[in-house]
Structure formats: C-alpha cells, structure tokens
Image (cartoon, rainbow, N blue to C red; front, side, top):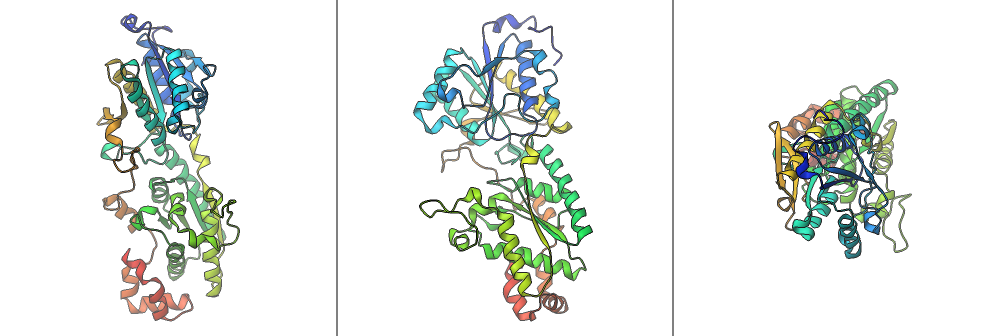
Amino acid sequence: MKPLNDGARSVGSRYANKTIAILVGGGPAPGINGVIRSVTIESINSGLRVIGIYDGYKWLSKGSTRHIERLTIDHVSRIHYRGGSVLRTSRINPVNSPEMMDNVLGVLTELEVDYLVSIGGDDTAFTAFNIDQITGEQMQVVHVPKTIDNDLPLPGQMLTFGYQTAREMGAQLVKNIMEDAFTTNRWYFMVTMGRKAGHLALGIGSAAGATLTVIGEEFDKKPIRLTHLCDILEGSIIKRKLLGKDYGVAMLSEGLIASIPTEDLADLDDVEVDDHGNIRYAEISLAQIVKDQVRKRLQARNIETTIVNKNIGYELRSIPANSFDLEYTQNLGYSAVRFLLNGGTNAMISIRDGGPLIIPLGNLIDKKTGRIATRLVDMDNPYYKMCRDYMIRLEKSDFDDHKRLSRLARLANCTPEEFRSQFSYLALD
C-alpha cells in the first residue's frame, strides 16, 4: 500500500466525489489504529475523501457533525505502531432508540457519506447491520470485527484482531505472577476479560502455563453454583499440595459471575445492591469472592495458604499491536475498502487462507435473540482437551486409586469417604 502523493491513483477520478467514513465502537483493542491507517491509505489511493468520526456513535447519536476530522496519509502513516484508537471509541449503541438512529442517519446523510467502515464488536456490528437495512442503496456499509474477547462468530475459528496481542501481553503478566507465586509460596486467583466467552482466559492460561483455568463454557450453559466453582479451586490447591507445591495460579473468565445464581451471592459480605435489592454485578469482584470463600474452607481444614486476587484486562486493551495484529489489521482495512469499491455492502470482513473472507452480516444474526451470535469456546474441540490435560485439577484417577485418595484426604484433614463425597463429582465434568 505505497502512498501515491497525498491523493489518488490514476483511476481515482471515478471516486473523486465519494466519501468514506470510519468509526470505532465498543472497548479498545490492540490494532484499531492499523485498520484506520490501512482504510485511509487505500481509500485515498483510490480517490476517496476520508473522514474519521470521533467517539463511535456518541456524537452522531446526538445529531452533531462537529466531532469529525478529514484524514490524510500523513495523519495515519505511522499510527499503527500506537495502542488505543486515534479516533477514540465509545459504547453508545443507537439501535435501541429510534431518535438516536434518526440522528445517526441524519448526520451521515449531511456529511454525504457514501461508504461507512465500522470497527468494533458484536454491538457495533449489529448497528452496522441496522444502518445498512435502513439506508439501502444510499450508503454501503462494512464492519471490521474487533474484540480481545475473540467471541465473534468468524468461520474456521479465525481470530478477531486484538486477541493475539492481548493474549501475548496477558500471558507475560501471568508468567510474572507465576514466578511471584513460586517465590512467595502463595496462590493467585486471576480474572481476565471475557464477559460472554472464555477464549481470552483459556488462551492466556494455556500460553502461560497457569495451574488451571476455569471458563463458563465448562458448565454447559447451566447456572454455575458458587460451591461448584470453589470446589474446583479448593480441589486443585489440595492436589498441588500432594505434588509438594503450595503455590499456583488459577485463571478465571469474568463471565463466570453472570451465571452464578443470585441466591449464591445475596448473603455474602460486601455485595452491593441497588434501591430495589438487586445485586450490582458490575461492582462484584469474582476473584475476591472466590478467594474469600476458598480461604475460609482451607482455614476450616487447618490448611495455611495465602491467596491473592487480581484482575487483568484494562492493561491489555490499549497496548500497541504485535506483528500478527499489525499485518492482520492492514489486510482487514485494505480488504474492507476493496469490498466497498467493488459494490459490496452489509458484510463483515475477515481473512482466511491469506485472502479476504466476506461474511454477510445477516448470516451472523442469532435467530433466537435477533442479535449477533456469540462464539463460545468449543468444548469438543481438541484444543480445549489439550489445554485441560495440562491443568492441575482433580481427575477420575485421583478417586480410582485408593492410596492416592487416602493421601489427598489426609492433606485435606478429612476421611477418604468425606473427600470423595465432596469432590468426586468434579471428575465427571
């Protein structure tokens, strides 16, 4: 994508009066600037006028045309090395408000936008789908999938951009914590982002060699009882003691908290509720809750173990992209522009086998919810089995071997029958 002056290729006159707009929605992810850069360069080289819209749909939803900027190649030529988003981002979702949607469409019309490139996750993709449905032939729309959660339904398990960089940094952080756990002889319970799916937690835990990783998909869409989650962690701590190690790191996906029944949380200390008595999930620290519960259990067994809770997530979102995401986002942005200029619309762009993969947005809509479907970790995929086999967790063999069971029970200060009664069901998971 070598820039030609600051303008267009010789074929650019075909698009001399056309405008392409770029906006970013949802949370930050490494590589956003790479998409902005490549879309801008390829658009200008094709003769288009490029405008960047600040703060996602925030100002568009209010009918404001003031928060935009004309983008040039000089503006964007090196922004891909930066983290964050030069256009910033917001989580404003206009789809649920007819007034906001009218304002968005009004501003885009006033700006004479012919092509819209949206960068974001499932909510931003759903907004792009709705804009295309409403505007028809007036505007062509393409969405570039972005999320460190890796939970958009791309074919062939293709990754969303930002995931690999976030996983790489997350794995480094966890490796550092693992060294601290070894040095200080303590356990860490670490929660990482993934409000609907456990891809990031599993990827970080596997890459770093965490002692174990627990994700919501393990529970087969059933409610996750707090006692069940604590049994998994307590059982792993006791099994590690059998191996002569009083330290470890447990990775937890943040989405676990949403599936824990309200009654399991209501009686806990320090759980905030609103004026109607409803639990404020946003204020709950999953790592703190399970740490407190497991520590009480171990104290009751006279087991001395230090547990530290820690969340990671915001540290991963706005870091500079690694080489995978640098190249990936360049190809995504380029492909998005070529798709639009070839007459395409209402699609999400991905890359497969080195080339662009066009996915109609309508194909991604979940028929039950009417929203963009969420890609969960496939528990039947060999990848999960490989990750699971490297974890230290209670297994069927721990209960089949009487000597081993007796040793585990002795460490837990209970009888083999009591140990089996509490923990054997975990071996069936």
